[in-house]
Image (cartoon, rainbow, N blue to C red; front, side, top):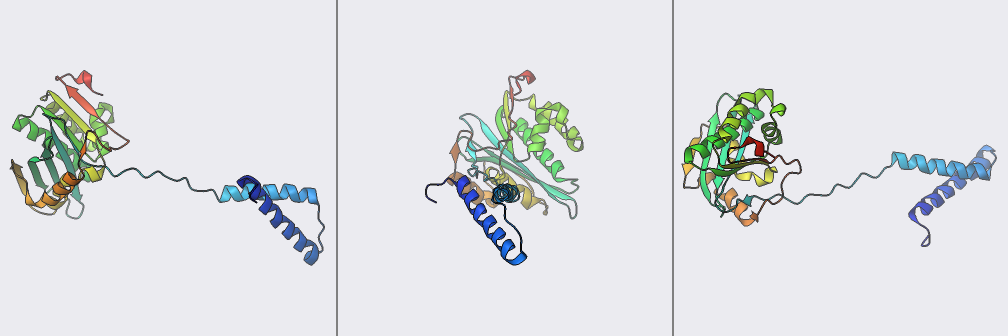
Length: 253
């Protein structure tokens, strides 16, 4: 056994099982034995067995994604939307952080007449753009964990009909920035905005904080700070990175 390959061992054990089966057939049923047929039968059985008992492919476990600081001189806005089908209520969360990971601003808004989770994700994106415009920030990164919204914004032919009017507004607002990046990230790298959106979907919370950190997200911010990553970090493989520089839509990638 030490000198045989795995394939040879499989054939050997199947041959033993075939010999055993034929032996019982001869003794108890009066059958006959044809050694050449036994060899063919053993190989056919082994092939059929492998087809039925295929080994599942082992999926590589990706590293846990981390929130990443923006480059110097740029702000990062994390967004998320939450929807409660019972009562058709929703909420959106926006968190703004600087190059050191400090919270610069945050928004938590209750939406009493939400239509879907997709609606809330699009509303969160629109709110983040309006916040940045009103605050006069002209270089920003916006990250969210809804790939469909990010993809739809990146390609006009990929519009989601349900939120097409909101996406139209977003494209218009993007022209106000000198540089803007929109990126899809994994949920675990979007924990702070996720917390705000889910807290407010079933409450009447409607707050905008500037130059202060809301108590309700202190713990998640601290967790991000402990696991902080510089640069782009671990992002979704289905990355929709939409860049707009110098008000030229032709620079989109």
